[in-house]
Image 1 (cartoon, rainbow over the protein chains, first blue to last red):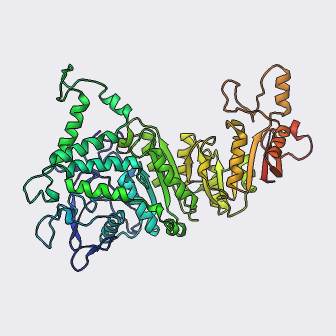
Image 2: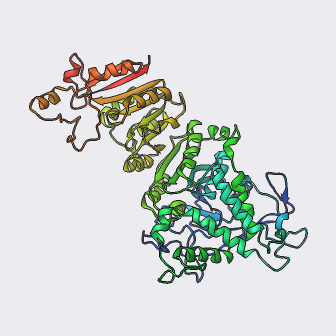
Image 3: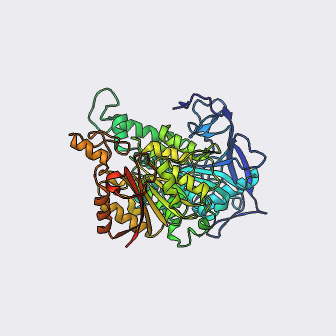
Length: 383
Length: 203
């Protein structure tokens, strides 16, 4: 799915910029009070910010995403991770909107994270990196907005963990966001979600190469653990139907050869997913980012909706009927909370056989809904 | 409703419903279709609210009009709305198409103190004539073939009003409409009305 069905050529060749947004003179103070004195942020932008500075759209990425959301890096054969959604003539139309996406704090794709160098020691932070909160991601997004000259976003859009960032941002700073789009997201992980998350982390931390997070100093890396974490997570990203459709019980080598090697096609697929993940993801980022999701529970705060009651944000919440990682019930829970606080909210459950991963696919009903929501005239829905 | 800034005509029966809703109300429109009623109320009467629709085409059209719209099943999912969280809840020409009208009315009564319900009149003289002639009723208000209709329940206005009473709903106002959807004064509604709009309150 490298080219959009819409036939347009997308945003073309793009590159990631890196900016130091927090410095010793202006450090990042985290939600837990800890301080980071140097934070670099990797980001990309497409389209043009208009004179009124009111056409900006922020894209928040999911667990393993990055700033490269659309277009092609020089010489690359595959585009950014949400290229089918973003570009000229696409649902998030870069002829209209100025689109911004950044790698989140704690990540490993250009923004400061636990494998970055700790300026105090000259070595990688490792587990000395502070625990993060959803609010910290948002603090850094807002700093990037300030750097780019955007005070108010026409829309903030995110799938999965990205939707959680949009929810946190819009609840705490509703005056900064006109439209909030949450796709296949959650306001609170279930015990089952946390269980999968925990096993992924255990796979990494029990890998003998983990060395209490100091693996970089040892010149090694818990590759086995990270690959297993990725393989297991990947199972939760697809529906049973999708696995059946993609692989069935097909043999990888033409015929079944009983043994403990890779025999079924699905085993080969997962193995490949695990291996390719190693080249682009950091084990420590995996620990830190999944843990943020586990603790996220904004509606546990009884005052969570106070700000958005005063400054209504228009919400679009969408789920996919075969998503069992963040099922439709996760989205309905968000809708109930927002709707009962008299916040304007639109909800759709989209039919798709592909499970959680559907949010990355070009599904007409889904994309049409995002386009309609971003482009419809508004101005009277303001309480 | 706005269509690129241009005001377009609201369907006649929806215009009558709109007139029954006080300015500034918070309105829940069940079976909102393409959201015309709420879009009209939001732009002309400073109302706020939510549409509920199950048809995907309707949901998308409502979103295009800027109407907050929730895709859900009226028969099973109204429980997600809080008690007394709206001023008015509207159900236009839909009560006859839900599985359990009593349950839906009960939920509506829980959600808002005032209900606006419209329904086609199966006792309309033309329908009776069709039956006498040996055929199932059909008219502008009941345009469907018996084998291809969303309507599950058939009631005359007399039946309907008895049902409202049994549901502890008080008819505060009734607007009787002729076959063309125009208000029709005078007696004999059960025979002469194509449909009716009711404003109901908790008895």
